Length: 130
Image 1 (cartoon, rainbow, N blue to C red):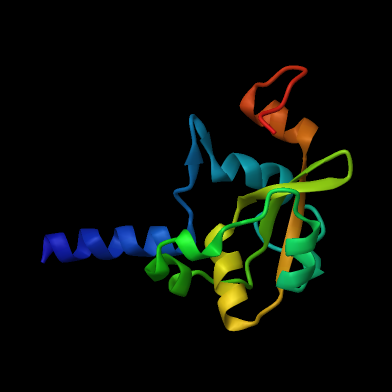
Image 2: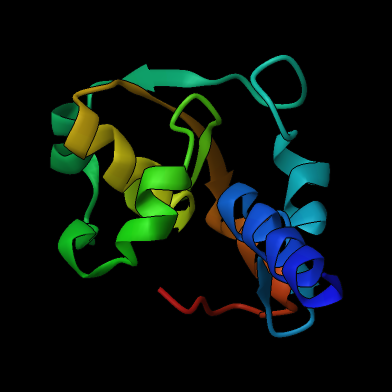
């Protein structure tokens, strides 16, 4: 029973992406800048998946993602996209939500994270990982 509960807890966290981390950075650190939902922080910008795909410099590859996580992802939660010089670079957070939206024909909402904010989060000076 304990193993079942632990596996269920892990599944719930995976489905909601609340344990997303990059090195020593947690998704909550990003939310402090962008806000977690469309009702807080930066504005949400609505897109069809086709519109967003055209805007992104680095296109997401939706067919290689874990299909279980894609089905569990909820595209109503905003995606976080890194922006450099006004150009959308890539989806930093929300690739499974984007894939779900593509497969189900739903629209998405985007919160923009400027490259300077990105660099500050990751402690990068004068350069970016992009």
